[in-house]
Image 1: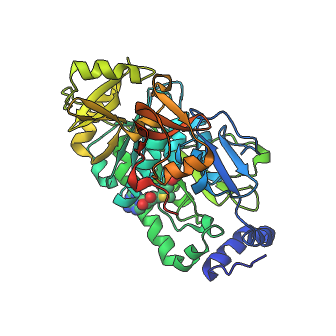
Image 2: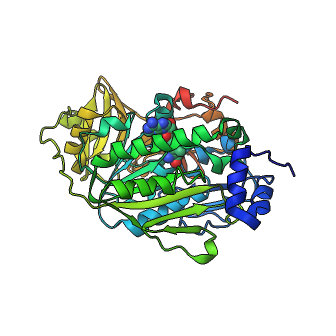
Image 3: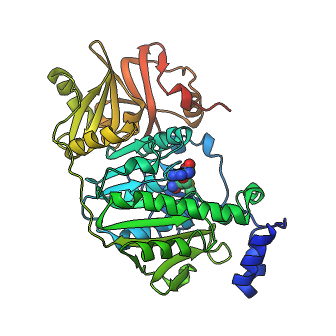
Length: 448
Ligand code: SAM
């Protein structure tokens, strides 16, 4: 068992706080971090593995498999995610009405753990705006959202400041704030090199700034879910206290089962929930739910659409591609046909005016003259009418070859076909009689 050399200031603070529990906390840092995944309920029913108690979709794995060589990982059948952060589900279930459509913003969203989880929980007529400020991270976020397969997500690449005009637009805002990362020291010991009292202070001020900036975008009575993967009070309780003291806001209590091992914090009018790795099977985490009580003017969505549409003939040809058609609108962006949720067209028009949208809805096909070339995102989308396409079931070896973008030795009637692994689409191929064109996106291909 390896022993961790914690930063001195951190060790002192945690020893003072944990008292007799400190040796257990220190010891658990010498053990391997548990591995857990969250399944995509739209693609898979369950896993034969130990369940994570606070979520319907999370499971612990006995060992860490090679996810890269599992085609189902690339198909968005599950997401590899740390168990504590799946507690977001409790916050959402207990503080919001998930039987109603909601507009929800995940402000610090990359690589997409919380966003994909939200998509599995929200009413299907909800709209998720999943935002990431760092461009390269936003690209990864868009990839993960695309794999999850929902039509009702928009991915943006903006600074929190850019949301300032969207007053009262969102019913729920999730701020999974950049933090000092103390809760991830076991998984990522290098994070200890960057730890300092000054950095904790710097993170705390940045978190306050982020929450303060995004606050006007939340509706009156809307819910802000604030979380971090750190233990420091400055970045957690003190920020919640700052919010409740400086805004008209109420910190909400959540029900937590005693056998979950989650620490409930109740200081005056502040509630928070802390996860310690020696008490739960997972990493360090903090979450708190705040309801906005002050009046907030709401921006009204535009009533003028900006989208072009494909011709009626194209729309008719595409109708067979989908399992549902009434709720979607097909729009044309240059040569790309996109499926967007009809009820949010005005909202998306408004968002398009103020934000940098890098992905919206589901990319369906590229229109080349009169030809429709199916998009990769469509193969992974819930709206795809799989039965109306030719499908080829691949062996594991073939599937890995396909994901490497090799040319497979597959003959068949000409046309586009879904490449399936265990009955789940992993992408498209264009069958050309005695050979095939592999349409897997080049930049996603397995390189190892
Ligand atoms: N929610 C993500 C998930 O579950 O996969 C993890 C988010 S991570 C804890 C915090 C994110 O905040 C990072 O992607 C980081 O790039 C972003 N970030 C960094 N500085 C920021 C800022 N000033 N404003 C908003 N987001 C920021």
